Length: 186
Image 1 (tube, rainbow, N blue to C red):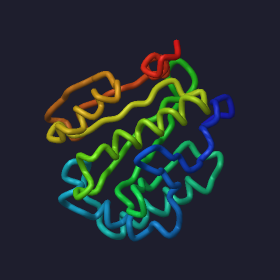
Image 2 (cartoon, rainbow, N blue to C red; image 1 turned 60 degrees about the vertical axis):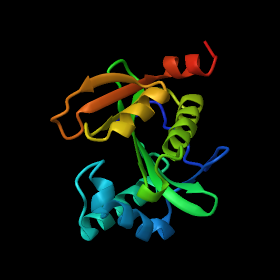
Image 3 (cartoon, helix red, strand yellow; image 1 turned 90 degrees about the vertical axis):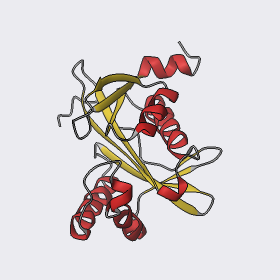
Image 4 (tube, rainbow, N blue to C red; image 1 turned 135 degrees about the vertical axis):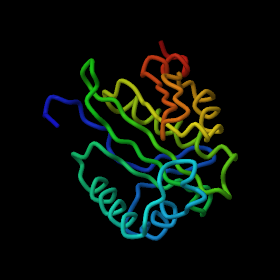
């Protein structure tokens, strides 16, 4: 990516009332791999990874976190002392200039429906929109993951597509302007 693109916000810990986002680190390999190799959990997200593929993906995520010029950032969601999920954001050039980011969150089955994904995405949106030139966040999910659609609506994301037969055919966006309006900043 060219030098003309705005910088991503710095990778740092983000803390909210009920959740802490801790940058993914070397000690998180087992947790990360357990998440991506869990067939029941991944059924709602994407194809389950083999252990070797999960380890490769972890190595790439860790490398991205260690590179201040990377366009990707990864966190572990923590509630109290427990790791409850993973959050990632990957930036690409926006059509109108600047950057846009795809957001992905995975919450352990035992921790779902407790507001952790909403808290994580809210913390991320606040960080990204206050510390960078990102113009929009977008996400996608499988049609069979109805709770993801409810979450996106709750957070103010706008539906872009609903292709039930496509693997990740439900797509949503939240622009900087929409976020600022929701925060009472016009």
